[in-house]
Image (cartoon, rainbow, N blue to C red; front, side):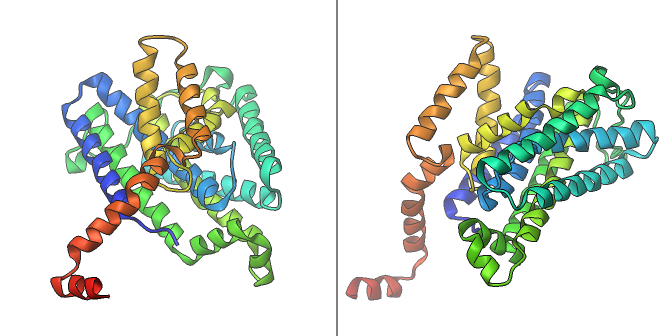
Length: 334
């Protein structure tokens, strides 16, 4: 079962403090980078839920984020719905689309699963690119932001919007954690490690995969809604397979199947992109070299390497520190 170690709690606290400091001290450009990181964190959180804990490596999660963004804009702009209702509808549509994709692809494995999800993503991209209803390759604008004036927040202000995105990410993380700790999450872990055995126990394994894929679609849909609100414009590029590929790179870079690692990877990736982008246009090469080094080192990403090196040591020290003198004496005598 998924659990939080002291190291994971510590990294989460460091990330939260860093995000809050950035939100309250940064200028406009720094806030835009923070918002970009937070939205990417939502996407990679959704991807890690299925790839890291279910073994379903998806290349359509970028497209699912795009579905959320386009569904939100269609309901808000074309149907003239209130932004909050449009957001709920968009998340529901994305979750339904993700469940259908998961159900269809659930019986495939490995490269076949990857290719099937890639095909679904490219189908969505091609449809939107050619659709006059959704603006084709020109995209769509005229997007409204949520109205939180009742609690004194103006989301048209970058600082307020960044704090709102941080709160949404925290809620999404708790949601993902609740899934992994539930019976469904434990069943998913069993399916990933030995699907034949889980079938022999009478479990409907394709339904487990589809359900988790649909739940991850909720988080991807939320990321799409925030992406649309952030730029207040969407285009088919949001649904391109490269968005899914980039998200997968971030998950591997941070630490697959850790839930915390992808958040570290998202922050590192976006910061590297902007910092290296000022020095060279070939910043992808640098990121590629780092990714190759991570994979060749056999470490599970940046966080996985840290966890393997110091996680057990920190947990032992904390356990020793919380033991009573009598317990320590009994342990020593033994």
